[in-house]
Image 1 (cartoon, rainbow, N blue to C red):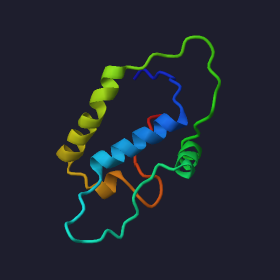
Image 2: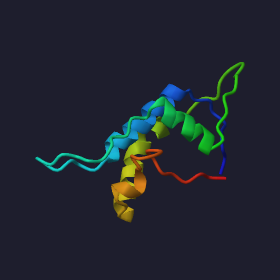
Image 3: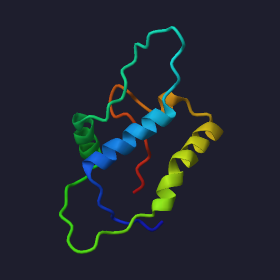
Length: 107
């Protein structure tokens, strides 16, 4: 697999994590209070996420790597299809107590 080292800022990462959570969170039951904490994609979450996956801040010079914007646009729907096809429960994808999103780190 060809890996590109593409810079991404923390706010973009937090926004994407939050949008994925909103897309896949379990629906609330009508008339029932939710005792589960909502995922917030807070600065603390971002710091833990960076530490967990050894992500570093780097300075980029020159032209930044271009992102595959088309692939990024269709990815949430592709991920949703995978989750539905495999029969994953929202609890297997999102953890509202800690990181917010489980994912496999490719090495």
